[in-house]
Amino acid sequence: MITWMQHHRKYLVITIWISTIAFIGAGFVGWGQYSYGDKASAVAKVGDVSITAEELQKTYSNLFNQYNQLFQGKLDEKQAQQFGLQRQALKSLVDQALILNLAQSYNITVSDQELFNIIKNQKAFSKAGSFDKQVYAEVLRQNRLTIKEYETGMRKELLIQKTLYLFTPEARTLENNAIASAQGVADKIEYKLLTPTMIALATDETGLKAFWEKHQNEFKKEASYDLSIIHMGNQATQNDALRRYIDFKKGTLDPSVNVSKATVTSQNNLFAPELFQEISALTTDKPFLKPRKVGDEFIVIKLNALNPASKKTYEEAKQEANALYLNEMKKSKLQELAQNSYKTFSGTVSDFIMHTQSTPLGGLSAEESTEFTEKLFASKQKQGFLTLKSGNVILYNVLEQKLLQDKAVAEENTAMKLKGNLLNQKLMKMLESKYPIKIYAEGI
Image 1 (cartoon, rainbow, N blue to C red):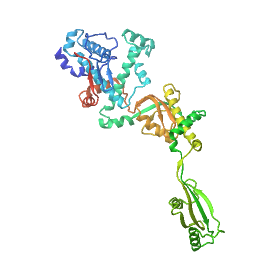
Image 2: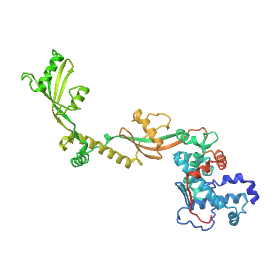
Image 3: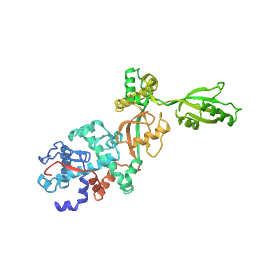
Image 4: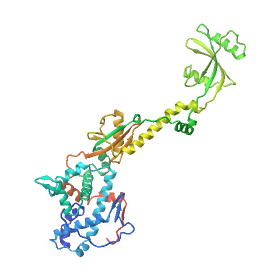
């Protein structure tokens, strides 16, 4: 028997990948009790994927039945132990878990529609040539499987196939596939736009005052400059202006000369920026500015007083603070609304969108569509919400995802051949070095 197994090694390598969905109609086989250390609910953990005792038992049972069929029903438990079927079963689950970690890192998923398309084409569930729900349920019941168990196993198998398809000979090298997988995936999503205008807030004097107290140092009156200004008129020459400046500076200015008063700030400024910069450099020790040409006339300026920047009172800051407070509250309420509704919302269904193409989405500007698409493909969540720079929030649910290859990733022959080839390549070793493998089961 060992000679036969060695001779058919290539075939047997493929069988270790078979999971709980491998054989409809296979009986259940156990191998006794094993110690699982302090992790009774799991026999192993690979990266973020746990392997349960139930999964291991089912995989062993399926593997045993496959070998038993090959050996015409003559395989017993003692022989199975000699052949190391327990270790093979665990190894197959560890290999699967490595691929599932890789799928998670690439954000690859299997949609409900993809899963149904595979199941409805399985002959075991057909009646009169078409898929039949009652037959489906009955076949699973007879094989001691619930629909949930079977579909969970099938979804995992499809996800593994989908991920492995990235590494076909026609695909790029492993180093390039991280980029290719993101660019070669298209998502069909349901989405809904939430905007701050959807949030209605009542007057909240208490909340506003608390907001102001927290941020009061941010509300300041800017520095202001009290000035005396002499306008020379468009007939005065520069010499006239200089004589007036000297009189003004000595305090011998003719009483008939009109001196106007003005207060200026950086925001409420009567002059060009260059002239205001000179005014802001004046001090009470050196308050006079020599004549400057403004338009068609010369002017002479004296700084009477500098009023430094100071904190605004609550009443002075109230209008400005209220605008900021309402904006902050709306953002907070919008995030709360998104958090409470992203799992149950009903929205617009898009066509398939790609990271590499700019696809306009209804209700969003071109810039928002681009920003949302980039954030969507960077996210690892199937469902969630994303906040845009504009303050708008988009709820989303990835309904379907497809790789943009011509071949069907679920084609059994391609997938099985690919799996056998990959076991002899560097992929599994790379994954083993990337994702920690912890075995809790003792005695296997």
